[in-house]
Length: 88
Image 1 (tube, rainbow, N blue to C red):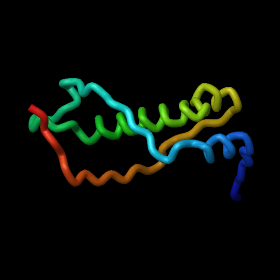
Image 2: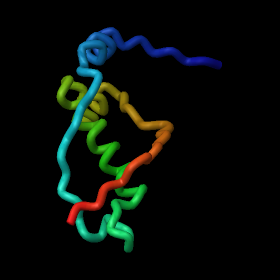
Image 3: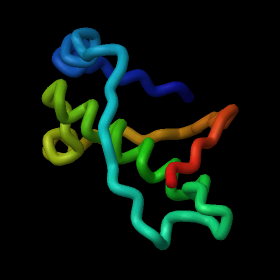
Image 4: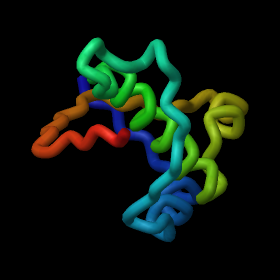
């Protein structure tokens, strides 16, 4: 059985979102590996936090969706790290 939910107001909001979003974070000492690089799980948490901020900037917060009995989740994340910089 396939369920399809129509979200006209949500679709209109999401279609006006900027395609890119960036944020700056302060990396905590316990989020790095012994090599001094950010751990992959920590990087994924930052990406999830950034996705939430991006949605909130378009007026689609998790609290608003929860009030409508809806939510969004990141189902799959594919991450390619080609270059890692270490600042001194």
